[in-house]
Image 1: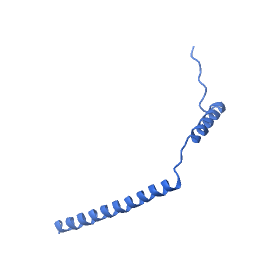
Image 2: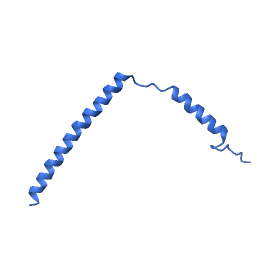
Image 3: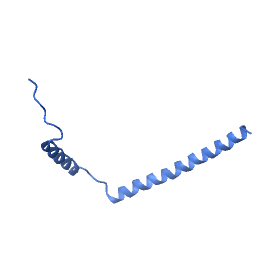
Image 4: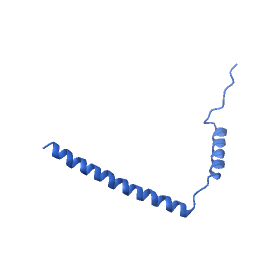
Length: 70
């Protein structure tokens, strides 16, 4: 005979899931303010540099393609 497994949506299973989520949430180690600001600065600088690079490559290739298609 096959035994039935409890439904994952039963109140007991939902309660168990929520308790496990709370337990895992307590294990999170959040970065301090200095680390967060430093990493945010790196992301902003790299985004600006990459945007300038891609914009200049796009402009250059557009000009070159325009010369060839005349």
